[in-house]
Length: 138
Image (cartoon, rainbow, N blue to C red):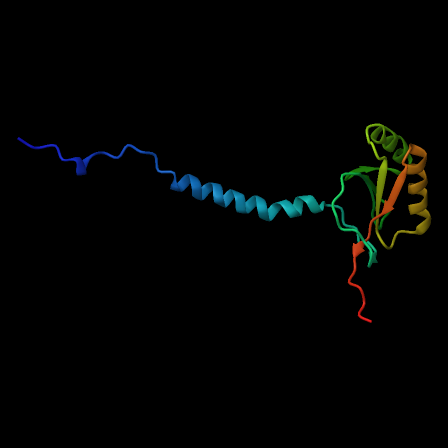
């Protein structure tokens, strides 16, 4: 008669190594793609300034491209709809700040027109976005 040997026992445990591998691969993929998503799909060349603030903020952003297309929080709109849309959005904001991301090649007059619409919509503070520039060596 054969004796039962514990070393030939069937393994009935779950192997979590493949699960861990898949989770780590997904983590790396999300880490690589998140900056691309956060950067946005609107191509704007911001002007440079030494004193530019690069800290992320949760305000309403109005983006103006070089071909005069307007985006409010990355949603396209036209020049006539800027004021009504901003009025609706500013109702729910505490600090009522609007950040203007205007391409450096957009005419000054067009940017002022958008800023005027934002002011009429109820914006209390406005900022013009700029890229951080290295301070020149003296």
